Image (cartoon, rainbow, N blue to C red; front, side, top):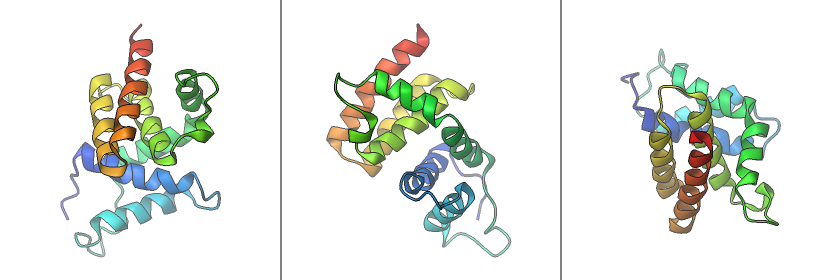
Length: 147
């Protein structure tokens, strides 16, 4: 396996690691990461590479988990009155958390790149309605962060 995955591929794996953490309190971050890597790269891994975790994947998963409360507050501040994050589709929340983490905390990722990547992730892991929702909410967050 070529250990140099694109950041887009790493984001896809991060989503697959973060999503089950929403539901399973007993699942460790490392176990979620390892499972997501196996799902995506099973045919490309040899014995020596099975434990390799790209540093950017670790950064994303750890960062989203570490800053989740703050990120969730930012998401809720951009929801319509009466809506709570608990009412949202869990996959959409996972995508939003990842994108907002990159926008706020990853200096070498421009906000518009994080936003566009989130839209692509929504296309892959959700549906058209979710893609529009993710785009709208992240556009509002981006405007706030740039102000």
